[in-house]
Length: 241
Image 1 (cartoon, helix red, strand yellow):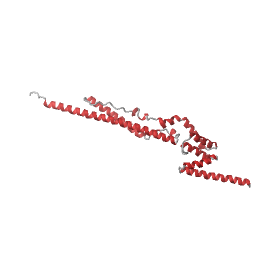
Image 2: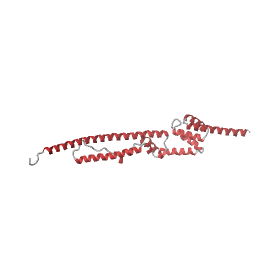
Image 3: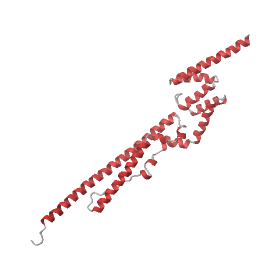
């Protein structure tokens, strides 16, 4: 009888743990992380492999209040030791993070957008004189500005296509980022994008201002030159006068 009662007690304890795990999962789904963490901690300390997995995930992604990779790894190891395959996969993912640390750091804070401003997307400002008097120079300046404009339009199109820059992060790297790292990367890349766009805008304004001033001065010179030539032609004495 005692043995029967003892077994029944174990069964009831298992049901109670299952109910608590369901409650913890429900709290987590509602993003009630502190309350979920409290229940998961109780169950994990009692040896529940699924709760241990969730503890690792909460510390890995920061839902435990902060990102703590050491604690995440410890809980994943405990869960994996009990045969939890998801926990074992998480440990493998953490090993990949160590192997790809340089790539993670690059996208979190070192990417500078050079691929967006070099090669075919490097559009140096053309040299524009204050004024041109010869047709050859006028045609040369006009051609240089037109070539710059084509380059700039291509640069702008590519920059727009690249937005947001987070989509340039290789998937195998993005999948290894913690939630906190993903946010750091987003902020960094937005700053890089804004800087490139602003520098291009300022440069374009300067080129267009110089071109506008050159065209106005050149047009004024041509107009005055034509006036003088026309006036000279009309006032010149005719043959036989």
